[in-house]
Length: 350
Image (spheres, rainbow, N blue to C red):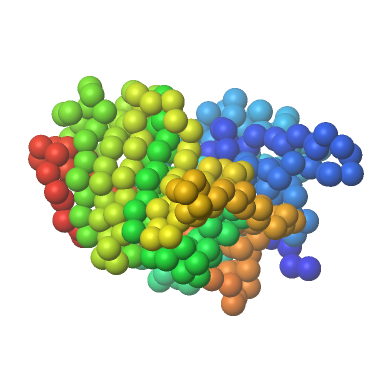
């Protein structure tokens, strides 16, 4: 089995958190969500280096993962790490606005596969230079819009594609609470809408949460740490194939991550770990069927990294390529533009 030397840049939260064992020993480990824990489950991957601007994060990483990778080297400069470590795979889990330089530098250093956190970037200029770098060098790259590797979301899309419920015409997608931040978590939901719409977005009409009326046309956040710097929003998105989507990502609501796919002859209601299909029943009462996706051995971040390795070997098509992540970013920036111009329709592409 080919072995892969892995580096991680950015060592907080989803990058480095550990994972717990299942409640019954025979179950094994819980399917992990973090980058480090996912690599730890894959025997062909060895994290040989990790990087963070804050020295304490490096110390914490070494302590947390000492039993798994006792010889991991840590750095405060990603360029130094790239120059010394001959990495095959790089995870980029830094602040939202710092992805572009790291990805471009990784390509120049000969990294073969890149797993980048969402959003791909916070400007189209940065997204385009990242895409140009990886495509020009033939480097495999995935962006961690994680719902694409959730079995219930894949199952729902296959049902929609089958035509069993007729044509998909509307998507209502909601998430709320303090972390309903447009660039940080809103990108997950907007990408999920795109995942089901499967068409080119044509226009957007939007409104930011109160207090952000003067936010402006460009990202003004701090990388994802302070929710106050990244607004909530509500938007109507229309696609070339006739699908329209209502995105409700307001911090003024307590709604969890939920997606409602409305078709001619029924609907599918989705949230992570839950899916149900409703069709018309007798006397108008809906017939509700709980969807049960197969229990796969891999899902979430582990599945994403296995897919990245398959792309590096050849013959595997990625579920979340950077061009799709760019589409989600363009919609986010169109939401800002609609607000800036007085909540008007903004045509795409920008």
